[in-house]
Image (cartoon, rainbow, N blue to C red; front, side, top):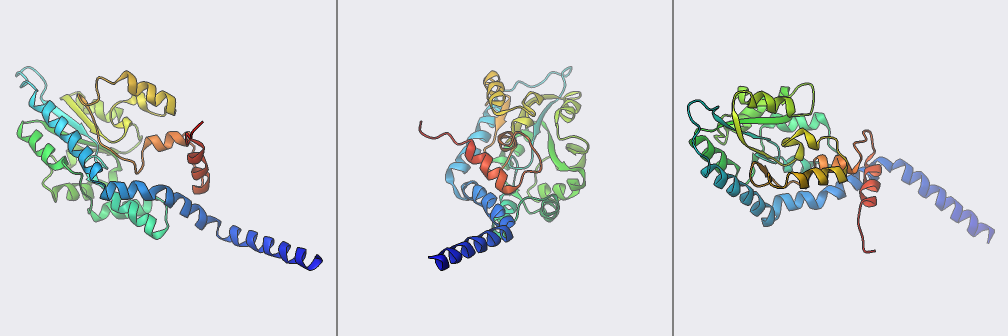
Length: 267
């Protein structure tokens, strides 16, 4: 009996050593598993494509209903986000899962330098139609300003209209897009905003908890599908940061625990 207890204690100790040594790997695997289905849905679900086409069809119908601005009015413009609104970056997310890695600014920059993202379904047709109507397009993104030229190359591959540096307003000092939106609105009548994140539309959504984000969304219900056009993105976003209460420095394992704690099961 004493020998058996000794063996069990040794096995328990060995298991702890192995778990400790593999802790970072397990944490990364936990984070990767949380991303697996969203990435597969994004890349393979026809439902994802249908939602994108639905969003851009609706946006096109809204443009068709616009009256031409008079000479005394400001010219029309559209403000749109880029990532997961106009360009699909799911390849980067998928490669991280395959490599067992998490997001990092360095690998993201390597990805954008490749200028290899592809258009979101329906995005190119919508933007070209808007340009035909004489509407200026401004791309407000939280890509870093060092990524402007690679993004221009990426967009120009697909003949995206207004894909030039002076129409790309990227992050330099703050992630809030409000000041950049106001910069465009000072000269143009912005008739529509497109994005995959509530922060792409108004500052009132920024840094709000889950309940408040839902409340503010409900207050703006008349704008969705009218002035605000939302694209689907289950890969990442401010919705995820809200689940972590905007805390930085959480390990992948801590993130997984937080996510599980938010699940609503059968009561």
